[in-house]
Length: 95
Image (tube, rainbow, N blue to C red; front, side, top):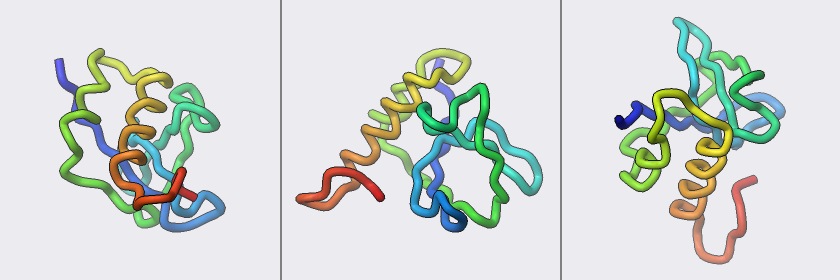
């Protein structure tokens, strides 16, 4: 079963330019996880205006999530895959 996965980049705050998986959405806020500091158990609450959604994810990333529920290990793997696909030559990781 394929899950509907959404990625987002923080555009404001001390975590600006950080990449996250959206694990829950409400009207004006989203709950974000990166699998390391912000886990599924303690996600980051962020105003929807302060993130940039990433649409049209490659199939390789959406296939990482095979279970009904997110797991921190899958989140870390998906974010790493996305960073490796989108980084310009010579860069090691996103800021």
